[in-house]
Image (cartoon, rainbow, N blue to C red; front, top):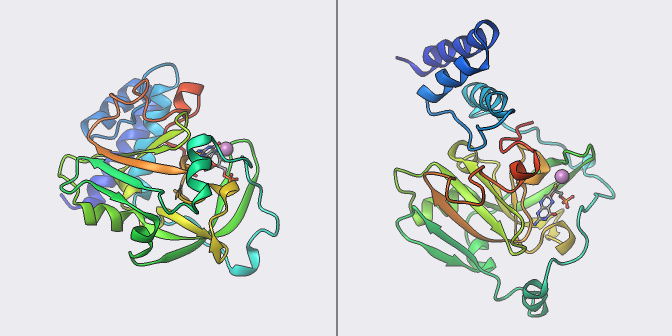
Amino acid sequence: MRPISRRKLMTTGLAATAGLAGLTAATRLAERYGLIPPDHGGIYGPGETLTYAAQRLLTTHSLAREFSRSMISKSPFANETSPPNDAFKHLQASGFSDWRLSVDGMVARPASLSLSDLKSFPVHSQITEVTCEEGWSYIAEWIGTPLIEVLNAVGLLPQARYVAYFSIDKDWWESIDMADALHPQTFLTWGMNDGDLPVSFGGPLRMRVPRQLGYKSLKYVTRLTVTDTMKRFGKGLGSAEPENGYAWYAGI
Ligand SMILES: Nc1nc2c(c(=O)[nH]1)N[C@H]1C(S)=C(S)[C@@H](COP(=O)(O)O)O[C@H]1N2
Ligand SMILES: [Mo]
């Protein structure tokens, strides 16, 4: 079947079953197509599944809005202004020359990349908005390495389904599916508004996932791992956020 007709069939089916027979039936349909998010359990589970499945069918290749240079926010709001911990401060003292991003899991060639290794990939930039679930947002230029470049370099294994990523501040971790991991606007970001990425904005290295809410744009990233399941991470809900009642999939 051609992708478009399959997609149409599936979205129509999802919407119809949600309306007629309730969310449980829609969940069953989503399951058949492998569109179940990690936080599918609990009271909000069927709703999360419906949102994620419908969005993925309709928007896998869509782009987050990009803005003109004149729209860059004059005073962007940094959610966290102090460096996270002693390990961080130690690395900061030597200008982040020892900062490493380790890449492991379901990849052919695990790697440990310095910032200059990352900067040796093709450099891309985007002017996009960070939107916090608390209601504020700002627009900035983000300069970095598309995650897909790094994933291609390490060689994804066919079972790869999610990329989980971790902050030096261990309480913060996230994951995205392959549609976002391979998306051209998903960046490992090391520059902002023509300079280095400031520490207050997640420097020296932050993930940018502009198609989702700000909390997916994890700051101070030191590790990413490719996996076929999120069950083994934390409480198995895909990231730290659903453990506090927020959605794993936070598409905007
Ligand atoms: N490590 C880490 N990453 C983080 C956060 C954080 O507190 N620590 N806050 C998240 C949230 S909730 C949002 S909205 C954005 C805020 O980005 P900003 O600091 O550039 O404004 O970063 C996200 N990434
Ligand atoms: Mo946020």
